[in-house]
Every structure is written in structure tokens, then in C-alpha cells.
Length: 115
Image (tube, rainbow, N blue to C red):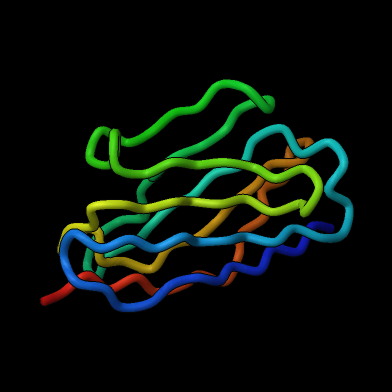
């Protein structure tokens, strides 16, 4: 089992920044995909960014150049640095990891971008 706990959400004005964290614990050896997803009200959950096999990084087109995903091995924590936030970034953000054939989700953290 893998436990994921997100933090760092909040309310910011357009153009602001936030850093989300996802602390992983439990049987984390063998995790080979980790990523951030988001779900806005009335919309499907969508991929924001992911790291594959510790190397390849993919971003959604809508966040390229503004968001940065990273993993800290020493802290077993996944980050999402979000800059130049826009109202359309408002959503609940979830981290997800894959270990073997199993996916694990965090509980989600709310990000609200509004003036």
C-alpha cells in the first residue's frame, strides 16, 4: 500500500503562485509513474503533469511554461510548482502514483484562482 497526502492548496489572485506537495509513505519502492491531476466543477479529471520512470516529464498544454513537476527522493515528496495562475486553473488537485499495476490517489487539495 502507498499513502499519499497532499498539501499546499489555497486561494490566490490571477498571476500568483502556489506549490503543491504530495508526501508518499508506505511501500513506495517500485513507484515508476507519478503525477498531478485536477478536476474542475462539472468537468472530468485531467492530467496536469507526470514523471515516468524517473525521467520523462509530460505536461498538459494548458500548463506548459507555468507549472513544474518534481520529485524529492530524500523527502519522498512530489511537488507541483504553479506560477502565473489563471482562473481556469481553479480545481481540486490530486496526486497519483503507479506501483506495479496499481494506482494510488491522494485525497485532493483545492486551488482557487480568483480576483
